Image (cartoon, rainbow, N blue to C red; front, side, top):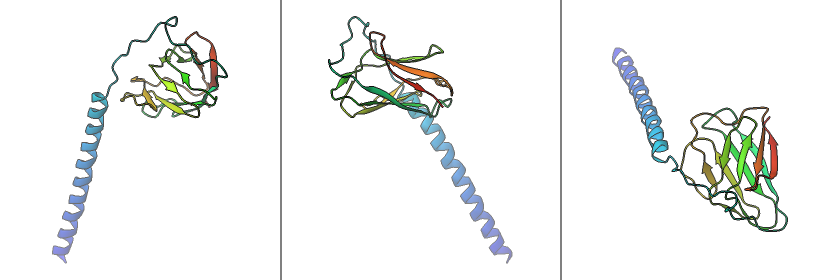
Length: 159
């Protein structure tokens, strides 16, 4: 009986240590990957030089803002609900606190969506990363999407 207890103790200890080591490795690996994927600063074009959006009906909506107040979870979801592709280069998101995210060179096609993450990461055609260390959006705020000329195109209230 004593030998069975000792064996059970060592099995439980082994499981605990394995879980602890795995969790620690994943924690530091994730931190290292985010640091390696930090976006480089892409110079934006002045509004006068930025390409103008296609003519016609422009309908870009801020569909939702998820994870407000938590840097690693904050995501702004935009969708092109119009009939034409829209060049978002020079467009920007802004709240009442002076937080501004300016879009890099990007075309949002009909029915397409793009997610703007507050945290650091590597930009893809559907996911853009701001690279902030602190949250940008807070519950109760109004966030606006402005074109390169400063015209309000969409607005969203964070619940």
